[in-house]
Length: 332
Ligand SMILES: Nc1ncnc2c1ncn2[C@@H]1O[C@H](COP(=O)(O)OP(=O)(O)OP(=O)(O)O)[C@@H](O)[C@H]1O
Image (tube, rainbow, N blue to C red; front, side):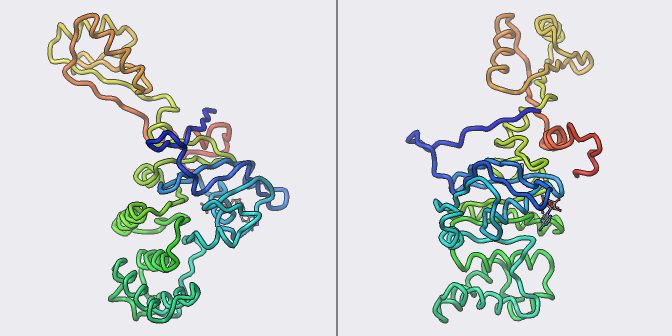
């Protein structure tokens, strides 16, 4: 099984950027069922990190541990620079959590939910009202503010949940499956909200079962399978881990096409389209080698495209291999 621990992105001065969330050999079991079997994570501050995995992989458990809702059985974790075992309150003060354990109370209005959060954060009454109004406006909930939250749509509830989380100005936000059950418009709306949070400097740790969501939002993705991190990296790095990638060269001149085909003998030919397909991981090194061979033969292609496998391929390769009882359908 391919596995990689990629280096954390570096800042311009060459130093490692500080991790907002880090975990080393994190373990958790319920009875004799091991849910997290020693996972390592590092999330640089100001980035989006996606923990991707099928149902039951342990994503929520990881979020619950990192957001101090439950404790791990083993390993260490730091959140916003605080050791979770030694100083969970300090970590708690720096984070916001939304998701499957939403804080929204359906019996009271959106506005009242916001006031409640302001009270929890000990904001003076006036300040609390100002912050609540501002956030309700920002999340397009002003009109619905005086209606009971139970009447809100799924998308509105999620927005209210995030607005409530932001009352405490968290540096790090955990979003557990933020778009599960939302319609496409509400999903895109949520993606936009997440991007805005990050541009405000917040670190986002999200869990998702959706590959396109991780691909769209995350700087780095960890694939969780069977309690272990099966692979970690940017979407592009993960796509390069599995076979299926290729480079396609297209020619308009049949003579150039023939010369290229005899130069690149490993290529699959498409004589009709005058195109050659060469297996490749799409890396700079492999591309250079193909181009060097064409150059030495004096051949120029009219079009060169690099095809990498998509994240679906990666996900299926990493989460079904070795578990023959599972089919692609099980893991969505
Ligand atoms: N309190 C608990 N007691 C016993 N088993 C639990 C408990 N919480 C979770 N589990 C089990 O741990 C495993 C991982 O659960 P978890 O909720 O972390 O998965 P997940 O990746 O978030 O899945 P989903 O996408 O379905 O939410 C599951 O098999 C679940 O049944």
